[in-house]
Amino acid sequence: MGSIKLDNVSKSFGEASVIPSLDLDITSGEFVVFVGPSGCGKSTLLRLIAGLEDVSGGRIIIDGEDVTENAPAARGLAMVFQSYALYPHMSVRNNIAFPLKMAGMDKAEIARKVNEAARVLNLTDYLERKPRQLSGGQRQRVAIGRAIVRQPLAFLFDEPLSNLDAALRVNMRLEISELHQQLKTTMIYVTHDQVEAMTMADKIVVLNKGNIEQVGSPLELYRSPRNLFVAGFIGSPRMNFITGQTAAHYGAHTIGVRPEHIDVSLGQGTWSGRVTIAEHLGSDTFVHVNVDGIGSVGARVSGDFAVSHGDRVSLTPQEGRTHLFNSEGLRIQVLPSMMEKFQQA
Ligand code: ADP
Ligand code: MG
Image (cartoon, rainbow, N blue to C red; front, side, top):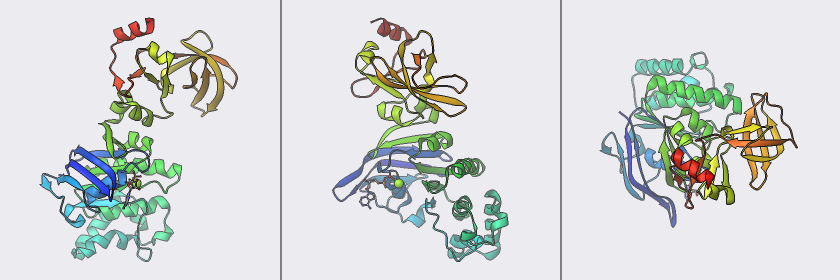
């Protein structure tokens, strides 16, 4: 239960087309992340699924049933927002119980469900507190608890961690992933943060201007990005893109190579240049190298590698890790034997 299908869904606000036309299949129990830059239509798409916005065209199908015309409450979905929207005067217990009370559920049954949700979310000791007596992460868990007790067919999260500080975000990311493993309920999670997408998703949907650029598992997108947009969006630090003479040499309009797929040495290599900046993260160091005839290229080396501003280094893209793109920005599939030919050309 909890499969969701979008069939030719479109959305315009007045003249402005925010989602031109979109098809998507979400399997029951999947953790799907919608990721893309701010303003690309992620929230709009989620709100269309929730029924908080009407579609301009197309159909939304949940578990085989066309729900396009159904009100939000009739869709069996639960939404968790970035702003927790808790009732400040109510205890945690009553905040979580609220949707069940509204539905007229039996008191004992409500208590059982609230206690169970609190257990799953580690909120048992906080049930009698007011929201203001909680940390940001705890408040977010209360908001999730309120969604859990409704036993929805799917959870819809809209950037739920954006208000939290970096350390807490990492924590909550793990908690939500664990929650998904326990509940095995379909989750759709919206974020602009590709790290959240990579670490949490079974399936990532990369959105750009209301269009799907690619759908795939985190490693599929990382290893085989369909085009320049996905290649540049997935992976941190970002993939290097090289155009012009060097790329033409490889038989491509643009070549792309990730910083972690470039070997750096003080000896001979494919490219040579001078280090402009070395960012020391401890575990590894990110070097920006001004390569002769190419320009700035980023490479990642082990934190033990001694390198600093002004050093002359060689860079060598690792075999089989170079991505080639044509003039339309689409990735070209290249066989290793072709690659050799390109390099000799
Ligand atoms: P995201 O969540 O990816 O940042 P949104 O879905 O919020 O993007 O917005 C996508 C586009 O739709 C933006 O250009 C935004 O200004 C526009 N938009 C969203 N909601 C409305 C609305 N109610 N009326 C008009 N334009 C809207
Ligand atoms: Mg949004």
